[in-house]
Image 1: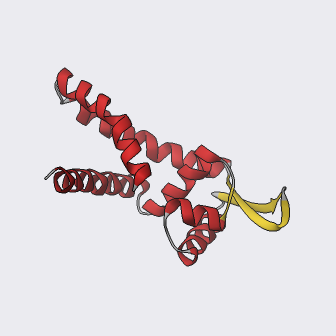
Image 2 (image 1 turned 90 degrees about the vertical axis):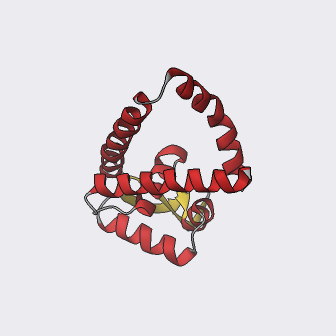
Length: 139
């Protein structure tokens, strides 16, 4: 059953990557906080409702996450240029540095694990990546 095997394999990989992020952050930045920083780095500033929707978490949870990131200077808040009644959040230079540090550690660990695969296994994995991205977008 492909769906079950995929769920198990991807679940194990996702848990392991979350563990690596947590260990790399020394516990000072949660996985959800890192995901939000990554989203802001990749896509630019967003309103809290947009971020909650994109990260598939509740409005209350995103409020807690953004509050913690803001207190630590990792994000900044300001008025939305298109609608001054709304507040948008963007990543700061300190947030980028924190994200870059963690991503470098994780990328190095993943690269090491990939090096242990055969060339054929790496090729098959590379060919599967676009399909995995498409599948993630459809869930």
